[in-house]
Amino acid sequence: QVTLRESGPALVKPTQTLTLTCSFSGFSLSTSGMCVSWVRQPPGKALEWLALINWHDDKYYTTSLKTRLTISQVASKSQVVLTLTNMDPVDTATYYCTRTREMSHGGYGMDVWGQGTTVTVSS
Amino acid sequence: AIQMTQSPSSLSAAVGDRVTITCRASQGIRSDLGWYQQKPGKAPKLLIYAASNLERGVPSRFSGSGSGTDFTLTISSLQPEDFATYYCLQDYNYPWTFGQGTKVEIK
Image (cartoon, rainbow over all chains, first blue to last red; front, top):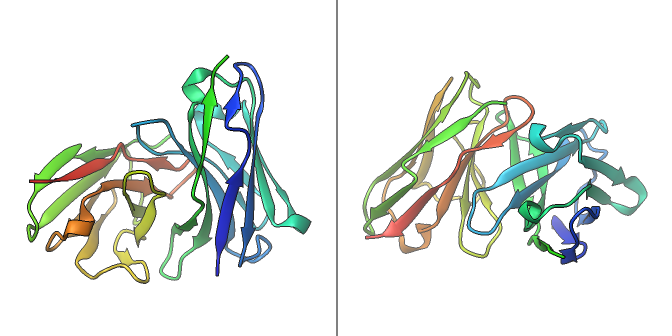
């Protein structure tokens, strides 16, 4: 059974750095075609794709946050870490990590999601 | 980045209705598009990948079509559990981008 769980602070102050951890089981990020993505959703707003790390350790980021985001893996612990620097109230959102994989008929799919973790940015 | 535009942004429909949601890409994305369903307070769920392929376990009343720039998600007979918000996502190139969502409400 594949599971993912996000963890991190519920509240951060403006200008601080947010560090979120995605702990997963049931798959290996070393397997060809496997990836982990991060997606966020501000309250009442649409989903926003943030970043992806793949089995080859390639990393991709959304353009608007590229200078502030870092995604990395802790292979031995089956974890993926996302950091977002210089937090602002507009970064208040629910942050999800997802297993993302190459699908049998082509393309990719975010086929298993964590429950999400809510982060509020406020002084 | 590729812009994904969904229409309509919301719709009202009755149980049993046929519902169609459209997603348009700002440039051609082959068939590299997925559809996701999200219910309030829940994580999204993958419905369709590669434009027209049904994810395992998803009811066959859901279907997807299209390629290039224009895509459609169809629910052939709307069920009570289908009232939710639907998002398209292009995975043609990085950065991946979601549409703004379509909320399907009860008429």
